[in-house]
Image (cartoon, rainbow, N blue to C red; front, side, top):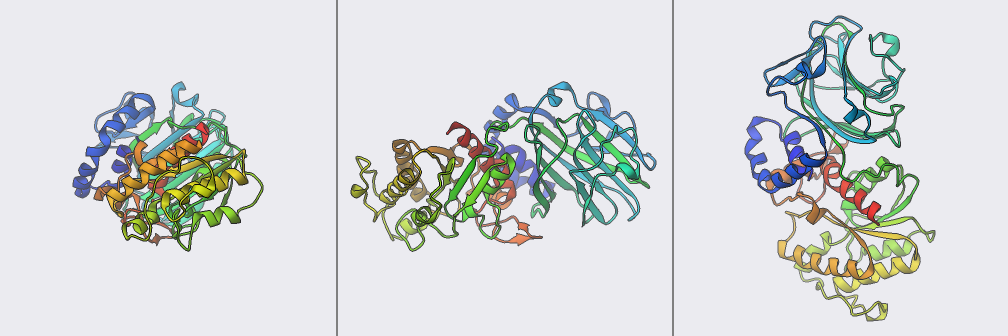
Length: 451
């Protein structure tokens, strides 16, 4: 349900329109359903807006398919767009937009500030000719002006002013937390920064275009604001989670996998036992071993996956898929098969932590594994999860992430790090930050709430 907007955000240039079109055949119906329920703003600036110029009273104009702001403004001045009550009353929001600055010197700085009804900062973004800035804390401001004394507390990094950048924010005003990612807007997107932080803002009330110093027109495009389908609204705060599995859970070569993003976002306490290369079925790197070595203290939740490396091992005839056993006696599980090993693993979890809620994550449709083997493993896994009362976070079926589609493989998976963050153009197995935040985190959050 999140894929259509994500393909649009990640595969920006016109030159890759054919890739996006290929992906769109799978994702258009889900996007339409989402638009009917959760989207508050979806503005491409292809025509003049109502109110005009997106509600900015000065220094703004819609032209050539984008919104330009801070036009003709002088140092320390602002122009404020107020969000309506349908936005300010929301406790959890997802916000994305594209941004570019024309600041021409290292001393000129213009930017955007998102603030609440009381002037507390939610998020800020700015740029000079050579420096990208972002901030999540800073002084309270009524936004009538932008003097140096009211500047956000900036984190600074070098950037290419000639490029467009895409900002993605998950705003949780119950927890007063923001999860953020800023990336270049290109096919091989480069993540500039990503993290989760506490903020003082308590709602989303104002978008402030700021001329901090000098001159520099900013351009904004593709503004999308929506209410998440699976917002926890603070219900998971303080809950403990143990995570088991393979490199998709661990994060591959990046230490923040989808369980980390979920725990950060919801203020949960995470202990991650997952290991790259692990499998459910019999091997030298079994997920069962992770469970056996885990702390005896019961967590609120156990989250695990499996099947990705098993698909290779089954395809190469290292072991068979097998079938579900008729009862729950571990002595009757065939541990030489995937099915028997899965039942043994779940039984071990139930025995070790009888009151813990267990969630199995069915990973996305993999272009990097044999399709029929994936389907066979999925079939028996769902049977066993139902038998044992295990909740399923079904990324495979309930999202449109399918890396058999080459455009999705490029946009949503990675093999190595770029700038210290997951890149793009992976094998189709390991979700990058875009894949994690758009598909895995919403599904896992919803499953944790159901469990």
